[in-house]
Image 1 (cartoon, helix red, strand yellow):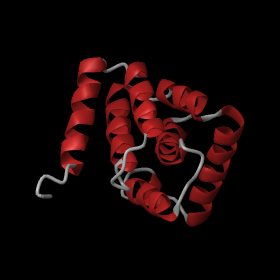
Image 2 (cartoon, rainbow, N blue to C red; image 1 turned 180 degrees about the vertical axis):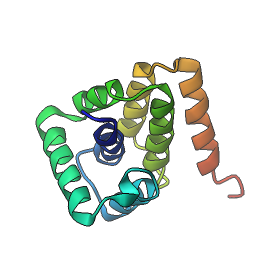
Image 3 (cartoon, helix red, strand yellow; image 1 turned 90 degrees about the horizontal axis):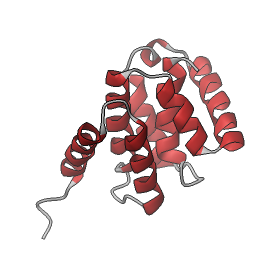
Image 4 (spheres, one colour; image 1 turned 90 degrees about the vertical axis):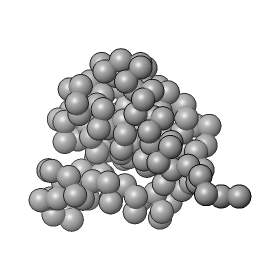
Length: 135
């Protein structure tokens, strides 16, 4: 698996770990990737082919195995960014489900950056999404 495939796979796993991919999640996934190199230069067809292959792997291997394979293909800084992106995506619908928390915990355990750094990243994303002005 290439880093390009791995990073996109982590985004996919973040939005589809519950077995569904709704319109809001698909839009959030696209937003997260389209401004990043190398995805911003990719055509619609290239992106479609990339995600067709990743969806096939997700269905056949499950999100846990796809996540493990993806993380192994990324270096430390890439893993940090992937964790932050995954956390951002699971918060995109404002409700973090138990299976999404399980995904983030599994991801944090497998990172080479260490548990403390992973926890910092997750806390910052949670703070970012906190509705602190709500009554």
